Length: 146
Image (tube, rainbow, N blue to C red; front, top):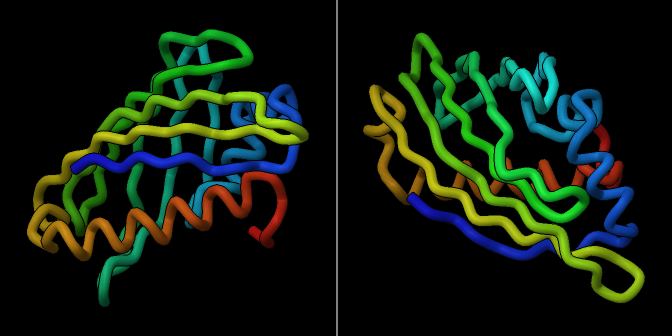
């Protein structure tokens, strides 16, 4: 599945870049995230609680950062597994563009799922992904409580 979009953020590019590169901010911004540790150089490990329909599960995952062009862009490669739901993985290309008084965050995400998670159907997975993305962007700049 592929998702892409552009979000306008009312903050300078340097501030958005700093927030995207802070494990503490990322932990607070990722919906359901209970742990986000590591660094760009060594990669990150995360634990995220996800709910799809009546099922709730913890995913334990790893995120690698590559192709870094500071303060403009990078690529994230992620893979996670949840004992009840299966596995999910994908890549996200993120690019920040100065736009007047703010920043445009351009993203393109390619994902795949397997196990029980893969059986939920494209529409349901897309709806959950959209809800998670909306929550992430709202929390990224502190616009919504954690």
